[in-house]
Image (cartoon, rainbow, N blue to C red; front, side, top):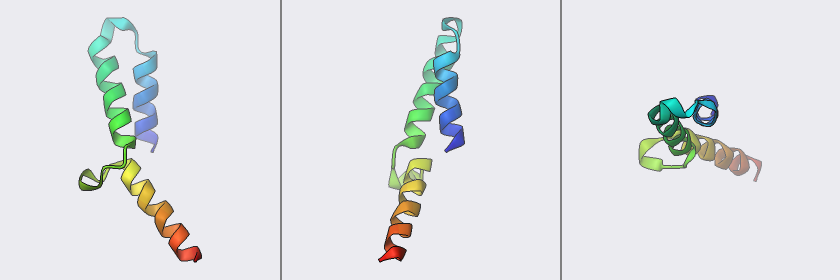
Length: 58
């Protein structure tokens, strides 16, 4: 999850002189958090871990 957080923070704090880097960083950060199964993003892998932990507790 750290790369997604770094991308979002970088997108927020980069100046408007580098608007392409700002938009691209924010887009990559948000898209890596989303749980997309066929891309196996960080959000999807985190969702699978949480699902597995709750399944083991039953």
